[in-house]
Length: 183
Ligand SMILES: Cc1cc2nc3c(=O)[nH]c(=O)nc-3n(C[C@H](O)[C@H](O)[C@H](O)COP(=O)(O)O)c2cc1C
Image (cartoon, rainbow, N blue to C red; front, side, top):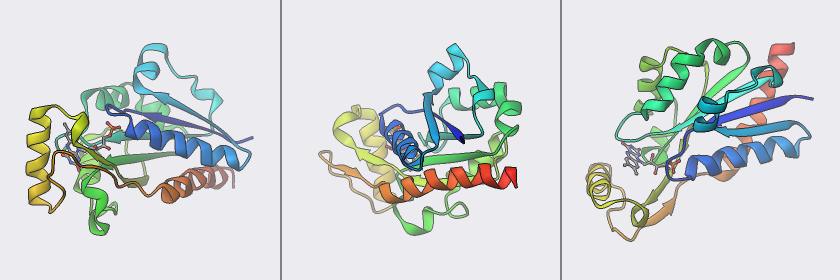
């Protein structure tokens, strides 16, 4: 039975929810899926041999990715590359169609520049605006980003931009990576 590991970083919980949806969609096909956050993966280790496919997801914070993302990749680039693999990023700029593509999402391009692991399978996913959960400084900074990109600036705004059906489709797509490897 094909088994998929979904590693993820999530500060606000939204990428965790995306990882969960990916796993649910995989399990619905009869395959196996585990989600594991980076803290657990870093501190407790990963039993890589159990998995046929590895996906890795990270949210964008201030135009880049949090330090543990690159630290983990640096330490485990060989294991990540050893089997079919995929990277997905989560950002609010991806709410517009032109920034929801691998080519149009500059944070994906940035990931490819900075990461020593170069996954060929990539996915851009739109995240969540959640001003009430953010501190005042983060709120001001994101309001500025939103002003430049014609997004919501009202401090009461909570908008989930994620296309959940597309996330489920990405889960099923991950299974096809295993099949391609076996072919
Ligand atoms: C402090 C902070 C900085 C952010 N910076 C960006 C950014 O530069 N570009 C962007 O598109 N989204 C940015 N976001 C939006 C997050 O990527 C989005 O909220 C994502 O869903 C967060 O995922 P998480 O809940 O898993 O941490 C930022 C959010 C926060 C709180």
